[in-house]
Each structure stands twice: as C-alpha cells, then as structure tokens.
Image 1: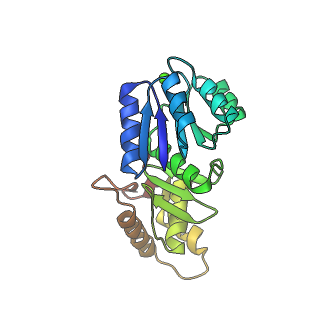
Image 2: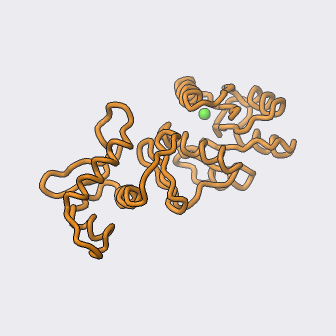
Length: 224
Ligand code: CA
C-alpha cells in the first residue's frame, strides 16, 4: 500500500516508517499538521497513519479536512492511552481504526494489514494477536509477520487454545481432552508432536518459542 505516516516524534516516526517499509509498503512521512494535510490532499494514499497531537494542526482537524474533501484514504489514528475521548472522537469523525499509544509495531502492522485487506473494515472481534502472530478465528486464518502460515485443522485448534488465553498453563491432558474430546484413544505424546510442529511453523528468527514448556505441568503461550 501507499501509506502516509504522520508522527512528530522523530524516533517513533522512524520506527513506524521502517516497520511499514519492511512489510512491503511505500511510505511518505510528515511531522507536522500543515505538511500532513498538504500531502494527504494531494495524493491518494491507501492509508494515512495519523497521530493526534501534532504541531500546526491536530490529527482530528486533518481527518475532518480529508473527509470533507472526499479523499478515500483509510485512516488509522494513533491516540494517547489516557484519552479515551480521543478514540471516540476519532472514530466518529471518520477514522477506520485506532491504535492506542504505546503500541507495539506488531500491533500496528496487524491493524495496517487488516485495513489493507478489508478496504477499511474495522478490526473483527475474533482477531487475536500475540507477538507477530495474528489469528482470525472465524476464518481459521493465521499469519506470522504478515505471511500466511499453513496449519492443519488440528494444528489450528491447538494453537487457538493458547492464543485465546496467553499466560495460562495447559496440561497435556487438558489439551487432549479439548481437541480430541475423548472420542478416541489418545496419547499425550500426540500433543508434544503438535507443539513441536507449531513451534517450527511459528518460529520468527532465533527468538525463544512462543509456546513454552512448563516443566512437569504442560505448556503456555508466552506473552512477548
Ligand atoms: Ca505527537
């Protein structure tokens, strides 16, 4: 996508531009209100990542002007954590989604990806993201840093257990019961094999695996 990133904090602006570029997007940047407005109105960006507090004029004013000019760009607002009204006001004035500061780059990228794919739909309720993994439960779709991960239906079910309750420890028996529902003879070795396969498929570089072994108990999804 062609993205305009509007952020006045130099370090954060640099991180955002780098993360988006690495994900294959083309990025223009603006660090103040008037420059952002001029760019947003003169070029049809697919997406504008828009900070609220900016020198010159604030993000809401920019959003209002963009919408008033019928610019079709999607808008993702970056709002301050303390200010819940920011979000309400942002969505009411035509933003497509928002990310609350401080946010992780993974979260930002996940939201950018969904906005790109769905043409402006808001984040579905059933979307879970942990680390670089994004799971859309209804669609049974999993991506790792934007790339689709091919999982078998059983692998998906096992991963889902962990994704939906990160930090909780699951014993092998509990996983077996949930997945295989006691319909068949099962053996807890099967769980180990599934965990091994998931770790392999969801390995991002040389990081520690997201699904950790808890010695003598079972497994849990690490919170990154
Ligand atoms: Ca700012």
